[in-house]
Image (spheres, rainbow, N blue to C red):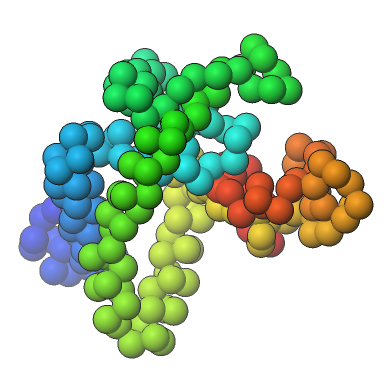
Amino acid sequence: MSAFDPAERNESLPARVTAALYRISQAMNRLLRVRGEAAGLSPAQIQALLFLQHARPGVRTIGGLAERLGATYATTSGVADALERKQLLKRQPLPEDRRTVTLQLTAKGGREAESVEDVLAEIEAAIASLPEAEQEALQRAAQAIVLRLQAAGHVKVYEMCWGCRFFRRDAHPADPRGPHHCAFVDAPLREEEAVLECPDFVAL
């Protein structure tokens, strides 16, 4: 069954839904491209800025960004190089492991990331126009699809610690390194770290 063949699509509900999702992805790509053209950024550079704005510190690396972009290491390095030339990011060693070079937004980069936060606002508005029951059904269906694609290795899910099976809230409130605990890396978490996106997230 092909979602691209109109005749076959007409006979299959899953194919029609797949085609609709494909069109939504085209709209997202166009929104990224148009915003990028206005800001002098490529879609990949916009995604990189938003990743660095919200990902936990330990994954703000070329490897972590490559996973998020679904790109090769070489391509991702090129994206980082371009942002560095624009003074939107800087490279610096990870404090706890100086062999690992991290990507950090500059003050200018942070402002640029904030300016593109609403790049998908039109998609959100379209969803918000649906009745609440339809929004909830859409969320459940989309999450189920994402989980299946994640299990097949086609997508990497980044979410904040809340709702993760490895997250231990207020495990050691007196610890100056952080009141929470991540069982995945076996380390304390500060409050501000617990609301950042993490690639090791596993839903409860």
